[in-house]
Length: 610
View 1 (tube, one colour):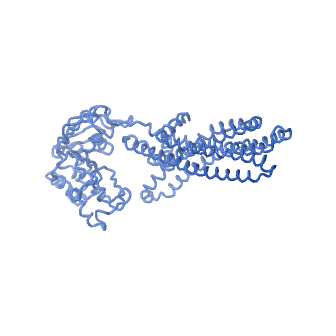
View 2 (cartoon, one colour):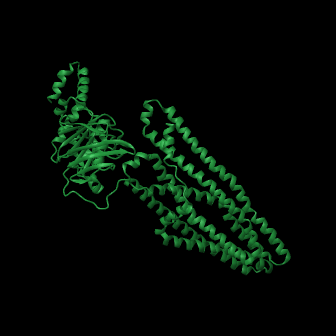
View 3 (cartoon, one colour):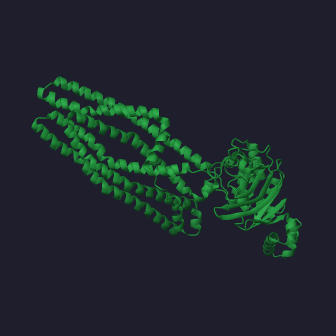
């Protein structure tokens, strides 16, 4: 388990890109909202400009109101100050709402695009990317980018404007005081640069380990029944604790970096105040600066110090945001290995005619199918048998072009699947997967999943053929019974029958049953086969099974061995060949005979004549 977790995390060792590139990508995402942002920026600028007038009003009070005891002027200045405050609060409130809406709309669109990209990815993507890691991107990293947008659009820009504005206003009072204040900013900028160099990799490591922890959590919660069945709770808890400890340690490392830099940066920013007071006091003593101007300059220095004090926090948010953006844009930049061709060629009519010609397929470097050829004419039933890992499921996956082959061709209704539109191709194929998956929805919606809005008569008809109608009607809520996650609450056989009904309700031209009746008894399986044979709209059917009883009536049986077609023919023809199929047949007959306490030979004769 530990090595698995390491391998999982190694797939996400992202190379840290230049921050400028990430910033450009984020700004591109903000461009559709530039009008709203412009209005928000104008509100922000006016609001902060009004704030910069406050020290000048204070100067007037010190220089004119107090010495001259001009209370009329004091009331006017007080009223002006109150009016500016009210206007500023109104502007800042609306500015905050605008920027919040921009950030939420940006993340909404980014989340939508990311989900669409995940939906468009081929099976090979999900062979190498874990669900927990993907969920970490869809939650934590999206929130990290949103926080960055909010901090950049609102806090960073606001503080930058305040810093520049305060310098200009202070410069109009005294260039020497301005130069003294700026002297504290130079070493601060150097520290901020080195702080960013340290903190960005630290935040990237935290994000990666969070993804690993999410993966372990998701897998173990989904597989909690297996964990309990094998009494592995202590082991899984220990493994979770190890990954959780790594997250904690990486967070503490980032905090340690922050703690080392932040006090120094806070100290350097705070130096501006005593330096200004010393220099300003000296200028007042010399008579080159009045007291009101010194007090006004002191007001501006606090405006200057605040952005400097927040610089470490800005760098921290900046590093977290770019680290999160890297991972999100990694997914968005991933191309899918299987996509619609530039020039689409569609069959004139969908009949379910399938032909494979010398097909070779490999998962990365592992060859799974070798020179496989077969043909299934419309309405025929083709059974595929073979040992575990012989390539049975892979073969039927190629019909819907879940993967692209290495060589040869897969033809559906006379057109290579690589030339067909994926949606139309897959719309003509109904799958009952080996791993039965039902959604957390009503049974009715699960059956009608491929045909939203399907009328109830069609839903019930599909369920009757799949032998699911009886047990569904007996449930307390009947068709409106909501199944739990992945079909929790139904038995294995019930889930398989609902899955078969879902594929039949799809009304496909090609029906794929991948070990679809392994969890039902043989009597129910026989009823399902009889129902399939009686359908008005016959499909070309591919049956993957291990039980001889599931394939005995197939028009042709393909036996795979190590990715190659070892045998093909009908049930009777393959028995006469005395090959692999005959061996499988005899093994199963012998097992049944031993259970029933009879000789294998008579039992075999009865099945041969079936």
